[in-house]
Amino acid sequence: MKVVRKFLKIMVLPLMLLIGILHFILDVMAKLSCYVIGPLMLFLFGCGVYTVVKHLWNQTVLLGLMEAACFLALFGASFVIVTLESWNQHLAAFLHS
Image (cartoon, rainbow, N blue to C red; front, side):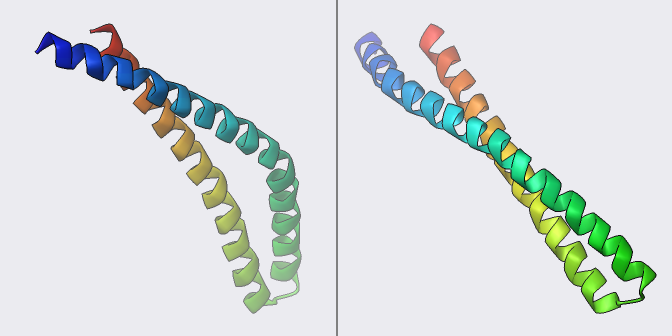
């Protein structure tokens, strides 16, 4: 049983490395995309206020949907990053057990 456990611990190391690299790349990409999506969301919000003032309700709905899509993209990226970090912590706990 100890041999199998040692073998699994050895196999966990490359997996931890792969998850760590993926976590780093996604984290950098998410932070860089915030510099693009943030101003875009601000612009969409401004356009949404303009369409409300002009009573262009169809455009208001479309701008609201685009704003929600941007928010969901950022939230989804953050969710994936946190999930990868959690997996890496669980693998590290198994490695240290």
